[in-house]
Length: 309
Image (cartoon, rainbow, N blue to C red; front, side, top):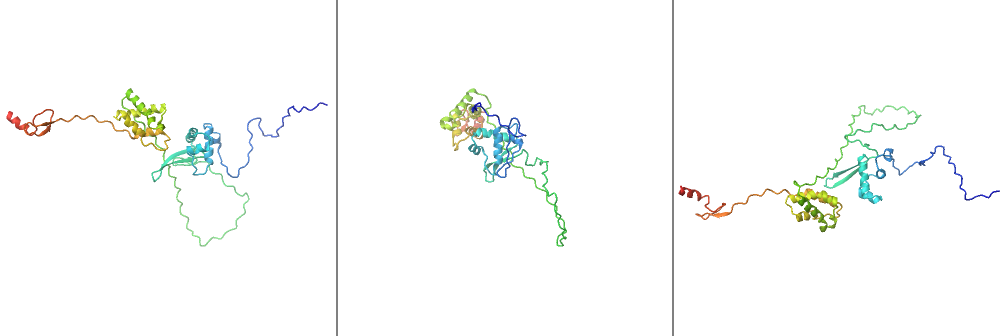
C-alpha cells in the first residue's frame, strides 16, 4: 500500500450555496434593531461623488441633530486633512446632499448653519414641490372584529367643526453668502510700481513670520497694492497698515490681506490747487494784500487811476 503524502494539497471544498455567484462580493446581512442609519443607493452608488464624499455624507447622516460638522471638527475625527474634507463637503453641496449657509443672530454674531439631506430635494422649500410619491398605507388587520353600535350622544354639539386653517409654508432660510468684493486695481500700468508693490508684499515677512506669502499670492495681491501706491500711499505706510493688529490665531493671512487692501483703500489724490498769490504791501496805505506783483490795494487803486486820468 502506498504511503500517504501529507504535503499534497487538499481537494477544494464545494460550497453548497445554490445562489452564490461565481465571483464578486457575497453579502451576509443581519437585521439591525438599534443604532443604524438608512442610506439610499443613490448615495452609496453615486457615480460622480468621490469615495471620501460618500463616506463623509454617511457619517454626517448618522450624527444626531446639533452635532458640529465643521471642517475643523471633522479633521479631528478622521485621518483625512482639512483640504480633502473641504473638497468632499463642496462635492456634497454641488449634488444637493448638503447645504451650508451663514446666519446673523440678533446679537450680531454670525453662525454657520448646515443642513444634511438624506435625499436631494427631500425638504419642500418655497420653490420646491413636495415629493409626489405617496406614503405607503398603514397595514390593517385582514379580518377586523366588528365594533358594537353606539348610541348618539345627546350632549354632542351638532354644529360642524370649523374649517381648518391651511398649513403655513415654512419661511425661506437665509440666502447664500455673497462673494467678497473684487480686489482694487490700478488705472494705469506701471512696471516700476508693480515691482514696488510686490516688494511690499514680500517684505511683510520681516514684520511677522506668519505673513510669509507664496509666489502665487504675491502675484494676485500685487495689483491691489499698486492701486494704493497709485493713490499716493507710501510703501512703508502700506506695509504698516497691512501688518498692524493681526488677530490671534492668524489662520488665513492671504484672505486677511485681501480684505484690508479692499476695505481700507485710500481715496484718490485730488488735483493740485494753484498756489495763492504772495502778500504785498500797499504803497499808499501800507495795507497787506495778495497780488502777483507789488502795487496798490483795491481801495487805493481807484484814486490813483483818477489822478492819472
